[in-house]
Amino acid sequence: MVSMNSSAPPSPSPHQSVFVALDVPQRESALQLAKVLETHVGGFKIGLELFCSLGPSIVEEIGAQNTFLDLKLHDIPNTVAGSSRALARLGVQIFNMHCLGGGDMMRAGSDAARAENTDVKIIGVTILTSHDAASLYQLGLHEEPRDAVRRLALLARKSGLDGVVCSPQEIEAVRAECGDDFLIVTPGIRPASSAMGDQKRVMTPREALDKGASWLVIGRPITAASDPVAAAKAVFD
Image (tube, rainbow, N blue to C red; front, top):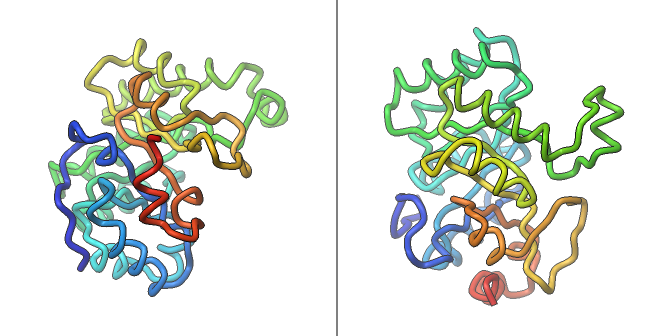
């Protein structure tokens, strides 16, 4: 198991606000990245690719208490309740479900998870950072991403979730709508020198924290760098 310094929310050091996205399929690659980065960041995000490749064992090896498990649960309430119960038993720090599953689904998942683990934080995915207004229109959502995110964040709060995932562009709107105690986990973070890739609504790490993000999710700018440790150290430069 990888040993982290802290599983608490972000400390005064801005680097402790960073979850590194381990978006790799191989166990060895994930463990090596976690080993070299563990003292330089606040935790690790395990997403669908890695979890589907290796299952719950990779959570245990990296350290569940320092893990954001990014599986975006989205199904009928009973199925999400059962899945949430299983994830809570793993002891992860944070996991998520999709707000578009609706209030009943989010409430069922939240209640089931907390019955297993009162410490787990549950957050809702609002609008993916790969979407813009045009792609939302194709899905039948005739509103700007900012408006959709704000609406879904409020629904998540009313449904008992601890926070949401949203792009940096919506941080201020969510914070104003949902209050200071609401967690905002922010992907779409790109250091000034990094390419945007497939992200459309992005911001630098420093800008996102200044606007009120709780946690930053950073993947390729660190994990694809020739020197991931140097890249992690430099994200706020």
